[in-house]
Each structure stands twice: as C-alpha cells, then as structure tokens.
Image (cartoon, rainbow, N blue to C red; front, top):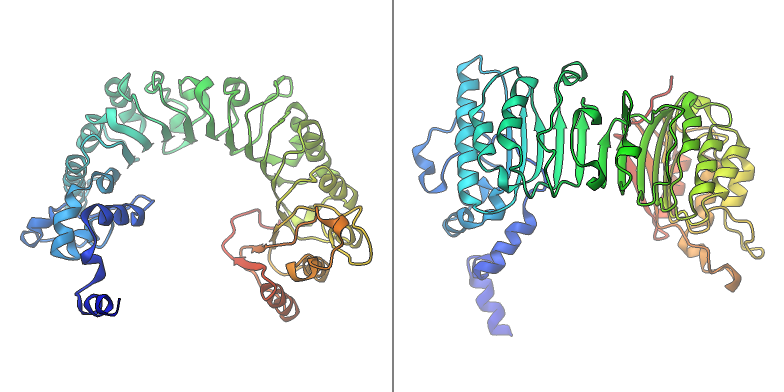
Length: 464
C-alpha cells in the first residue's frame, strides 16, 4: 500500500490513470445541464489556425474540455453525448460582427451534429427577428428525426417553413417549448407541425395559446402555459395531465370538468375575484400545489380548503403566495391547515393572521402531554415568504420552529410518534433583512440539525 501511494504521489495526475470508459462517464456526469450560448465553432485539432472573434467564449462546455490537455483533446470529439446539446441565438444581421456570429453559429451546429451521430438532440433555437429563411434552422431540421427535447422561439415568418419540413418527421420528440415574440404575433400563427409527433408528452407555450397548437392532447402529461384560449380548455383537452403549470387560472364559469385523475402537481396564478373557479376542479391524487393569488378576497383560503377537501388527503407540498396587505382570516388559515394532515412541505407568506397566537399554539410541539390537536404533524420543510421587511410578529413563528427542532422532539412520548421534527427552514424574499434576535434564533436552529436557507432573489408578488 505504501509503495502504491508513493507511485500515485509521483504521477502527473490521478485522472490521467483512469481508463477511457471511466473518463467518459465522468465527463458525462460533469456535463452542463443547461444550454450554453456562442461556444467556439472550431475543431480542437486545428484551434491554433483560427483567429477567434471576441464574441466567442472559448471556455464553455464542452469545448473547454478539448483545451485542457492532449489526451482529452483526443477523447472529447468522440463522445456523442457531449455534443448533442445545441443552442442557437440569432440576432438581426445588421453589422459585420452579427454576420460573423451567424457564420460561427452555423459552423458550431455543423460540428455538434457531426460529433453526435444517432444521438437524441437537445436544441434551443431562438430567432425573434422577422426573417423568411434561416440556414441554421434548415440544418437543424435536416436532423429532425433525432429531435428529442426542443425549444423553439421563432417569428411567424419561419412557421410555414417549419411546418412544411417537419410534418411527420419528429418520431422521438418528447418535449417541446414553443414561443413567439409577442401574443399579438402568436394570434396569427396556428401550427399543426407537431400534430403527428407520436412520442410528444411535454409542452410549454410562451405567448401562444394551446388552441394555436394542434397536437394529440390526450397524450400530453406535462403542460406549461395559458389555461384557455377562447373556447379551448386545457383540462378538457388534456385529461391525462400529471404536471401542469398555468400562467393564469381562467376558464368559463359554465365549464364542467371531470375529475383529473392523473394530476399530481398543479401550479397557477389566479385573480382573487375568480376563486370560485376552483369549485369546478376535483384532484383526487394531487401531491404538489402552488398558488399565487392577486387581490386575495376575504375568506380567500376557503375555496382552496374546499378544493382539497373534495379532492384528497394526499397533498404533500403546498406553496401559497399573496399580497400580505390583504391577508386571510385566521379561521380560513386554520381550516386550510386542518385539511392537509399529510403535508410535508409548506411555503407561505408571513403575516399576522397566518401565524396568529392560536395557530402557532397548534403548530408547536409541547412536552406537557399527548399532542392531540397539532396542525401539520408531518411537516419537515417550512418556507417563509417575506416582503420588504421582517413582520412585527416574527417571534411567534420562530418560537414554533424552536419547539419542532430535532433535539427537542426526542422528549416526545410514545403516543406522539406520528410527529416529525423540522429538517429545513427557508426564507424567500426580494430583499431579506432579519433582526438580530431572529438571526440568533436561527443560529440555534442551525446548531440543532435544521438546515436554514436564505433565498433573497424571490420573484413573487410585491406589496401594493
């Protein structure tokens, strides 16, 4: 063993001792999971021949791998999975630099396609300028049979070309994001390009209503976009949804909806004056619910409680965001918490009615007897949404957190085994300014095996 360690210590680097297949796995696991813009379109073996323009970032993945050492430069071009992610962002060709950029994009796409033969392609193509033809898009469409996960942000001038070329030629397309420059432009743009995409299961619409996209909605199980477009209702068209994120919850009051028996995750923004629309939903297997409410009405949580009561007790995660200047009544909050006994994760705005004395008393764990009426007994992740500044009653929820920390829960009796201690507390806000007292209490939590996480860049509803 000592001899081995001496030999290893004298080697140039341990990674150079790894077999080829192991190195390939490491590269794949370390690979970027997001699209990268403007990576250099130059072959590694001829890199010194090129005068790399200033707009090229030659440090991005996976191009930088080939500039690390000679062995990597020999390996990287022959790993298709590293080259199957392609990002193209085309601007208006109104300058020499912009034209150079488009040429670079074309060459980069060529290299990526050559080095990822037969691999499923992950593509993001963005060209919002009103052009009538695009060689880069034509090149990508010539490999449409390999499209797997695709984001298209295109002007209406390119839609006809897209429809003519792609129809019946995307057999493995699984996920599609489709967007236009504006809703006004999208209103004139109807596409049946993906009507016969047999593997399509996930759709995201940006500035495009679902009525403008002709697909087999019965096969779609993941949708992000508007709820409705004129007389089109996404819940009626796609009854087999499993995940759904809606920019607005809005549909005709006369619409009668069947129970959505597959829907497990739902996220939507709703006007408080339209909360009655929730009465038309029944979600028997819902596990994750995220609601953002504008103009929260009096008793605004009652509609949510009613939805959960007639749906199921399976909800595990709940996110509620609203303007704290129009907070719900304590009884509405109490009723809501009582309908979700199996909730494990809660994110909610901090205000006086949410964490009143009575509610905090029932949320807290006590060591003076059996815990018979504890609210949210299984809750182990709690997130606070704080707008502007720390609320004046912050001491109440902080005291409740202290009672549920793991080190104190060891004192609970055998009758209280159903109670779960906290393991994570999060603070969300645009700018979070916590008092010295609160900070000290959070340090105690952190020392008691509770993860305390501050997330200052939260995009929610600012106070009116």
